[in-house]
View: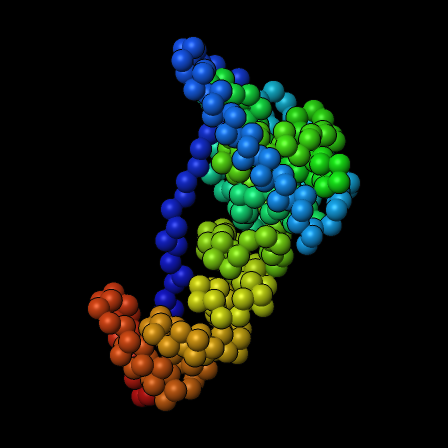
Length: 336
């Protein structure tokens, strides 16, 4: 039995909701004024860094991005539909509404926005909380779903929009937002409203396409979650693209090897797990999975050697040691 790729990343989320109201005292408002002064200073720093980034094209706009005007309180389904259709995944806001919209909250959960994207076949990946990152994605042809607070901390107006373009020289961004197909904001205003969500943003991509701004660990986390609802073929495509980019990453290699095995691509599975044992010689799971693939290829002696090596490096992991022992038993039974 192959050792499965463990999903050890907890899901988290927060509610995006509209038209919330709260009465604060005058003292609280004075405190918030100080907070917004600080926020403005941080926004200015982020804008300056982005406009001075020489690695970014000075202007980019994804003009062919679809547009779905939102119904009241339903910016989540509209934004998500925009991102999915842009990734060639046909869906409508009406289809997404029961999946992501929470009537009692008059908004959509961040965690459900990501989960719904994955259910519809997209690899949903949160990107770094930086202006440079969202612009890097747009420049690479990826629209970005962003969460903004268009109100204040004491009277928040949470809103999802889709960033489709920017102009660094004019310090402008363009979004599919609400009922506006091409909503224009100053870069500083966008940074301030986005900062209030702790710069929450994600891209929804077809399997095989990688984000321009995320690192290997972030992509690995996303793929581990994505594979729960994905077909073996899509898992293989997604992991292969990631391994091509980061050929020695342990989680990505495990994912590709398992997906290749599930697709009965034994040569690829064997090559992947073999490379994994070379790059990560202390990975007992890699040896176990290599042994299973070699057994399936009827390479009994090599399979037994791999399993024994895995058992020797398993340490105190009793569950894994038990699984490797089971693999060894299956190998020895195949001798007779």
